[in-house]
Length: 320
Ligand SMILES: NC(=O)c1ccc[n+]([C@@H]2O[C@H](COP(=O)([O-])OP(=O)(O)OC[C@H]3O[C@@H](n4cnc5c(N)ncnc54)[C@H](OP(=O)(O)O)[C@@H]3O)[C@@H](O)[C@H]2O)c1
Image 1 (cartoon, rainbow, N blue to C red):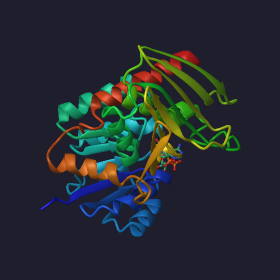
Image 2 (cartoon, protein in one colour; image 1 turned 45 degrees about the vertical axis):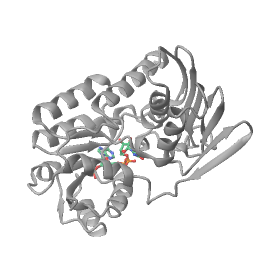
Image 3 (cartoon, protein in one colour; image 1 turned 180 degrees about the vertical axis):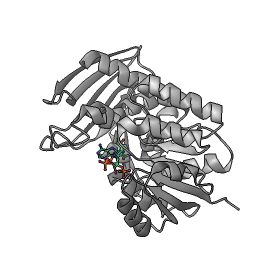
Image 4 (cartoon, rainbow, N blue to C red; image 1 turned 90 degrees about the vertical axis):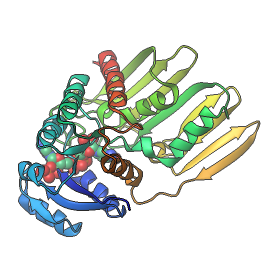
């Protein structure tokens, strides 16, 4: 019989709410405790999502003996410290993306997870999206021949937000590259691997954070053109073109529900109806890892998180 995994959630904002909705959809997941800097928020969240305990501080959650894995859903600048504290308490951790603000943070978090012999994964949920996995399977099976060109964007209009919003505030790890640019970078890495070279240009807000970033990734025999921004609306499609065909992931591709394969003018489509908000496959992967005693996922490994972090750093080098 499959084991039930006992979860905690730390940092109870927008994404924690969507994640908790999906946690309820996973039969083998139990929400044991939730923690916020604001006890009232924790109590309301506990009630809404049938958690067993509400904590007005994170330390008590980390120390809760019933909890096996904690989902860190706080802002980017807190990911490292909160993850380290949970690992120190012996808990497994699923930490929101980006795992760290830079590779130094990411490496420190991974080193502690290894020392503590605890599970750690970056919450790179698109890696577990069934339509993206189908695209990868088609490419591996040679359905589009040699992949030569990848295009992915992630953008929407949000320039009207206040300068204190987490996206606009450099102290909150703001900027579009860290917030949404990691998705197109992930897709290029997942499909084409590590690039030889990256060029990039940005447009910044008055606060100094990037609000539009364009990237070209150069590989030995192929290229990727990527974009992230909060200055425009978009269909948010992604595509991979090869010597024999093309794959289209319908937008928002990072949570795709439909993927198309076109060969010699004929298009085949596969639909993957969304289950909840799209976090169920990621939660199930964490559950599988914890149940089987694994300390990292093979599907989004520690090394994958480091490689993505390195790509982000290379882009930052170009746009600073
Ligand atoms: N996977 C996804 O699809 C996805 C989507 C959006 C965002 N994210 C990621 O999820 C994380 C949280 O994003 P969000 O949109 O949920 O953020 P949010 O609602 O603005 O805030 C989340 C939590 O961050 C904590 N926090 C710490 N310092 C704060 C400060 N100075 N101001 C406001 N809140 C602060 C609060 O936790 P307390 O309740 O403890 O006070 C707050 O509830 C980010 O790392 C982001 O990159 C992921």
